[in-house]
Length: 334
Image (cartoon, rainbow, N blue to C red; front, top):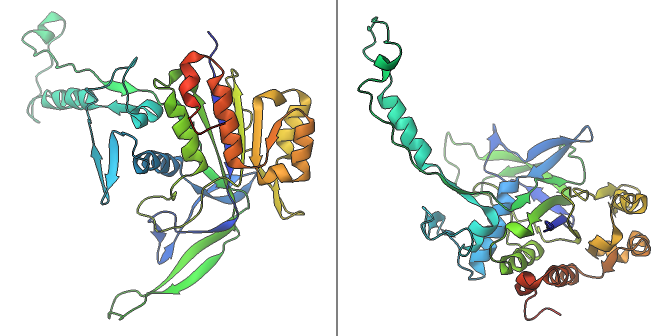
C-alpha cells in the first residue's frame, strides 16, 4: 500500500517582527538568527509554530492531552494510559507524537545508586561470574513513545537582517539604579516555513483536516514568554499531496527585490523540469493573482485565488484517497 504525504510551504505577509523570544544581549532584546544563502536572516523556531498549532486545537474545543491555561501547562493523561496506536489518540498526541522517558530516568537512578564503593577503595573488582554474584537486577521500565507524523521546519525571514534597532525607554516612574533604556532588534520581513505530514501514520484521519485549518488560521506564533504580535497566517501557500518521500517544495519562496514582493520561480522551474508533478500541487493566496500564478497554472498546477480555497481543495483530494480518509473533508467544505 502506497504511503501518502502532505507537504506544505507557507509565506506570511510583510510585517515588523520584534522580540519573538524572552532573550537579550545586555539591554538589547534579540531576534533569533540563522545564516541562509551566506546572509543573516531572522528566524522563529519550529517549536513555537508547533505550540501555536497545538494551542489552536485547544481554542477550537478539540480534546487535547496538553493544555495551556493561565500560563501553565497541564496534561489530561501525561502517562498516556489511554493511548492505543490503532484506535485511540487525542489530536495533539496523534499528530505531534510524545515520549515518556520515566523508564530511562529509573534506570539512571539505579545506575547512580550502584556507582562504586568508598572513594578510598583500592581493592580491584572481581572478574567473571563473581562480579555479578549477589548483584541486584536493574529495574527495567517501558518507554512510552509515539513518533510525530508531523514535521515542522523553522520559519526563516525572506529578507536578510540588516541590523535594524528600535530605541526604547521604560514608561512610568524610574527607580534609581534600575535600567530604563533598552534596544529592541526589529525586522520588517515576511517569514516562510514548511511542514510535512505522513497521512498514513495519523490514527484519526479527521485530525488531518483540523491541522490544515490550524495552518490556515493559527493563533499568534511566538517564542518563550513572548509579547510579539506577528500574523503567521499564510499570505500564500503551496501544498503537495504525493507518495514521494521528499518534499521538494521546502522554502520555495524568495524575496524579489526588483518587484518588492515574493517569488516562487524555483518552484515553477522544478515543475517545468519534471522534478515536480503539477497535478500534485495546489497553490493559493496572493501569488495566485500574480503573473507567476498564471505560469504555474499553465504548467499544470492547480492555482486558486485564496488560501482557504487551497485548503479545501487539499482536503477534498485527501478524502478521495480512500474510504478511511473520508472524514478529512468537513461537512462545510465543498
